[in-house]
Length: 425
Image: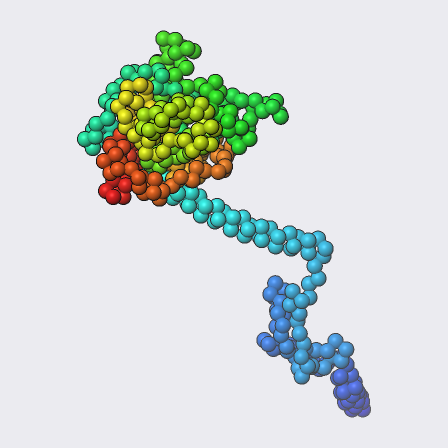
């Protein structure tokens, strides 16, 4: 009995002692919870998606709930400090993106330029087809216009009438030059392409057409023409001409026929020119000038004395049947159809002086030589169609109409409108 009582007392005392211990150490152990349930608001966030949040956390120093305090989980951008290598990589990536954007922009701009070029080329091609078709229609007789040589074959053209067809075998080009239609500059281009003239300063062939002296390009020895084929190739000449006409790119440039006549007169008779004065000017003055006595021997003397052919005398000379019987027209006023034979030669490109710059650019691309040279940008002949009325003011209407008949094939072949203001006033 005494033992049992002693045990009960010991148990009670032990229990009281344990309760005291629990009370003393309660704050240090943070409560006595064997199965704590975690508040869902305070669940750990996945490491892959860090974000800012606030919640109730245990203070690592006191163990007390800090639910009244705000706790921030930093974002990756604000908390991550990039290493120099990472920073360099990020900068390179950004630079690469910017470069790709620039390249894309350049590609778009190039595409737009190519579309414009294709559209521009298409317009030129259509214009060229229209010019060539017009020649075919006139030569086939659809316009019921008759003129000498329209129906003859190429083989029937005398060699002396083929002297305006310049051949460049290196680039497979044939150019028919027409005086007073930018032929000086086109001859300079042909000299550069054929490398037929040596520059005294470099000792090498000229490479820039503008550097070629204009007075030298009219030297016939510089150019290989069809008229020289007989001397070079004998009986094979006509066969070789036919082959080259079939394979080479052929072009010519034309101009309003009456404007070309005015330009020729201004250039050859509007100022002293000894050769043209002796060969043509003196003839005009004797026949139609009513000049009494002998004429001055030189052009300079004649001009000093006020003796020079007028435009009306020039036109009268062109219409005089005796002129035609004496010889074919000089090349400066000979009709283009008699210089270049468009009914016998199928030209690949017909340029116009009125659109010289754009036509020249397009032609050089067609010839695939635009990377080798540029067409000379020298001074152009400024004789304009607007001058026609003034120049023909003193010419009788009947004479004007006769002159038109003489050059009508050129008007029709190359699509120049009939000059009604000259023919009906």
